[in-house]
Amino acid sequence: METSENPLQRGEKKHRLRLMLALWLAVGVVYFLLVSGYIAVSMKDRAFNDYMDYVVGLALMEHRPAKEIRSLLLVKADELSIPLQGEQIKVDTKGRTLRVVVDYETDVRVPLLNRKVYRKRFSHDITRTN
Image 1 (cartoon, rainbow, N blue to C red):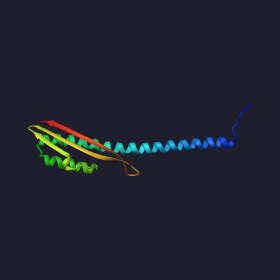
Image 2 (cartoon, rainbow, N blue to C red):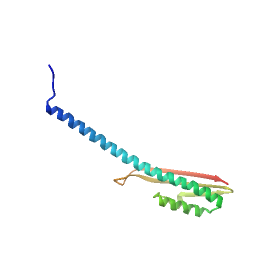
Image 3 (spheres, rainbow, N blue to C red):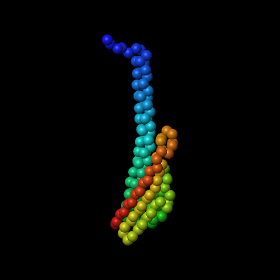
Image 4 (tube, rainbow, N blue to C red):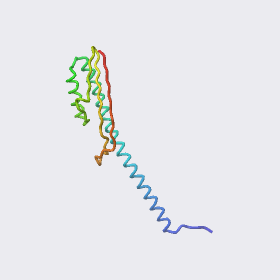
């Protein structure tokens, strides 16, 4: 004897499948938003680190003062929307060695909602010798 599903049971299964698909789609969208916020913050930090490396090399060759190095880094941080204050940039010169240390924290936000979901700490330490 065969048991066949009645149309009501088939409709319930389809409804459950659609509901599960919608749920997984929502989870995927939330994950995508979280990851895109994290990637955006990381890309800004990478650009800042590259610029910092460039400035340290140039400042060492041209014997730039600490105040000028700090100013250049603050302008770039502002350009990249990185929350950085002057006291978070430490410039140390000893003889022919220049060391610049930058520590800061920034919020990882969900792009569409503009909500803070995580606080990421970045630390950069670049030392160059002439």
